[in-house]
Structures are given as C-alpha cells and as structure tokens.
Length: 326
Image (cartoon, rainbow, N blue to C red; front, side, top):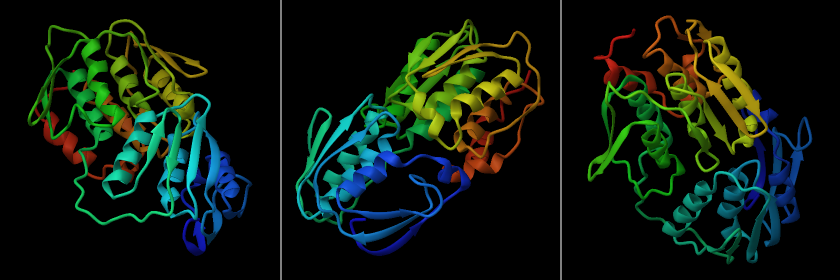
C-alpha cells in the first residue's frame, strides 16, 4: 500500500481464514485501495498501491500485534506523519517493541507514548549491517525439552535483555522447578531428576507462541496448569486453544477451555496415539516433545515445522540421543 503498482496477496488456506478487518480498515482510512477477492476482510487481496496519506488511525490490539507492526513499518513512507493509537486489550506487546527497535536501527524515527505512536514522514530506511538475534520462540522448544526430560541444556546466544517476550519462558520453567543460569554464552537450563515440574497459573499474553510448549510441559507436572491471556490464539495457524484441547485430551489429559486460555490436568495414564497438528508449526514442535517421554506418540504432519524451523527434528535428535523413553 505504501508503494505504487498492483499487488496480489494470497497464502495458505488457513491464512485466508484469518480475519484481517482491523488492518484493512486502518489502511483504507489512510488512503489505501484494497479489494478482497473472495470474502470481505480476508485474503486473497488485490492491493492497488498509491501510497499512504498518513494522519491519525486507531487499531484494535486485542487480535494481533502484527497489525500494529504492519502500520508502523509502512508509516515512514506515508505523505505525512502517522499517529497510531492501539485500543482494546493489547496482546503480544513485546513484538511492537521489536518492530520499533528494528525501524530505529534502519534510521527511522519512532516516538512512543504508552499506546500511542508517532512516525514522522516522509522518512527513508537506511541500509546498515544488522545482526538478527537468536529466535527465542524456537529456543523455547528446547527449554521445554530439558524441563520435560530433566538434565541440562545450553542455548547459545540467547540474550536475557532481548525485546523478544518468549525469553521470559525461562522464568516460567524456573517457577515450575527448573534452574536457570544466564552466562555470556547464553542460557543454561536444567532440571534435577529428583525435582518434578509443578503446575501453576500463568498469563502468557506477552509470549503467546510458547503456549503449546507450556501445555506440553503441563502433562508431566504435578497438579493443574492454567494458561490465561491468550484468547487471540484462536486466530493463529490453527485455533490453538481448540487444537491443544482436543489433542491433549486424546493423550489422556483433562482440559477445560476458558475464554482466554486453558486449564490442563495431567494424565493419570498416557494413551499413545497419533496427534494432529492442523498444519501448525508450533503444535508440530510441541507435540513432538511428548514423544521424548512417551512411546507410541506420532505427529501426523511433521513437515509443518518447515514454516519456521526446517531443521527442527534434526536439531531435536542431536540433543536427545542420550535420553531413553520410559
């Protein structure tokens, strides 16, 4: 929308199901011309790029932080300043901080005041050398693996001061009974064999991508685990609340769905089975961890991990070869 020309935007079937009304309404209010080819407020789209006018715009932050990030990234190319106000219950706030950090690294000024953001325009992004941080969302899989199996793992180059909200998953595991140590080389996480994971209640609105990992850890914990603040997970690659609920029940857990999360009672007896991942990369990675402890667990579509971590299974195998399944 900030450039010129005609663009056709499409993706997977699941992407076409995800509602985009807040973003499309905001862009149209800024002068964008966007046509929905099949269903209103959903992809596939035709975008007639004529540049953005700028001005004041509001967007509901309760569905996805991605909409706010998209507006911020396009804002410097508008004809005049953009003033963005995020309304509603804001989710995934750390991702907006990451967006601003990257914009500033590439020479763009962003002014933040609470839930209001001003991007002076016009500005130009400036080329630079930029080091991309280690992926804390992917690292959470291996934190969870150590928590489930016990033992010790070093995750290199993870930064405790990162803007990535998922770094905080280490603290969640610490509160469940793991030990964490930050070093110059990264994060060391371990669980002693004499210590069992403990259930509890956590609000994960700032790190929703780790919900599947915590849900799987809860299967091996003492007592129930409650996850709150993640109603927006219904609009991810799958409806993650329904998907997690159905598959964890299949393996033997009792699961209660709340309007914004789940309560999981660990199984008294595990039922080996084939787990569906609904073409969702986060579920494929998380469900694979169950097989580290329980024989006969199969992930139905392991190729789903290719969206974000094509070498996930090779990496997992390399760190778990010394563990025996019970």
